[in-house]
Image 1: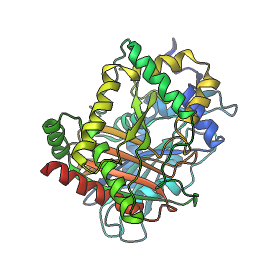
Image 2: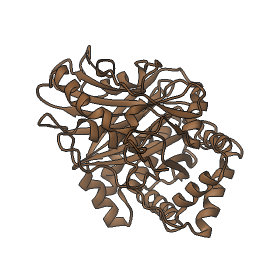
Image 3: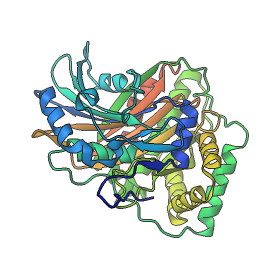
Length: 414
């Protein structure tokens, strides 16, 4: 669904929610689930007034910022007046933050407003020892990660150009339709074996990161016939294997994960709603060799691309009643069916705000539906950032970023 202004140039008063939007609303029982982009800067921060002036200048022209979820949970309702002071705020981290995870924890744990206004915020977060982070966050019911990336760029960048690539739809193959139906069927099957992640939740969330040169992942992919996303997932697979082996002395079975894929078409960059589908993938955590793990991941994702399974899933979703599609969505991304969502977003050129260039971008979302862990790989300019959001019940999950970095090194040397 494209978003076209009505005859007088205004936006429609209401927009129908799609099945993914309804799925998030159903899982969260109407509460916001944060999704956000965080941009870390060295050097002095801009003033809060300057950030508010930028937002006031642009927010009314960005469709995703003009809607909220209606009380009936069936439509997005337009809001005509944006009170910038309620949406743009600042705070200071109280303690040393060496890996830059403090702002992420703040964005995931600080309550979001449920008032009668669009559910988005911009935060200027000052570091305790210098530096600052510019954060954009929204409610996942109203916006997916790629949409949030485009919106953050349009709202905050000095020259808002570039961003994640749009998806150009094509006709799926019979194999793609079969793969899509197989993924749906698997989510309704027996509970998947994922011992490292099957723990009672604490309700407390933590965040950790690891940075790497984008050229490293590209080089590994070129050398071994994979994409940047394949390298990310293979290194994650080996990191989970090593993490579980250290804790238990036992190998881990293959881990089912949910891989979100954007279907946001040209012209829909800042439209409200979740324009995404989810594929199911088994991370080969039983594979001792990270190189073999990469070969297995790359073979699976190549089949998904060749069969155009993304378009098959999108077609099936469009042909399914929204309530049914929402129920299926809650089963496909659920702690009983998968260990984690594993997102990847290429933000493109570094965000420049008031002349300052961000040195790192981070996409993150909160945990829901029995999920104890989720990972994202965010690329910006020449740096990628692995982010692990995890329930504190996974007490040693903070080791995963370092283990992922070690797996990358092993792949680079292979």
